[in-house]
Length: 166
Image (cartoon, rainbow, N blue to C red; front, side, top):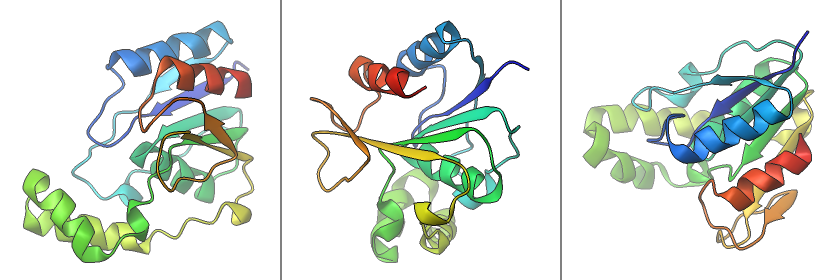
């Protein structure tokens, strides 16, 4: 059975962006069948996890990393790579509501914030092997691996770092 890689982009992004296409190309050269996932960013993150096969690699970036975490929380598979895992769920609820209100409206922002506050990330409890990455220039981010000269963006350097882990 061929290995499958799921790519889940960051908030407001989709897998049609060049940076995720480049990630997809790299994974294909490594022998993966790539399954791009384009979340509905107006829906709560907890409603967006899905079943993956045991031979899956799930790569999520930022909010996509939260979705990847939620998948790993429910299912066991080969590996999860959480890239620049968003810490937004640790912010005060009011801050989250303010952040999203302009984009999705006050009502949906409250639903979104309530959902985010329920997500308690604990990598210790996962049965899926999980690796975290963060850009070296991201403030306040801790991870297993820091991607040199990189901020909160899927860059060529970030893709090269992921390539070494798959």
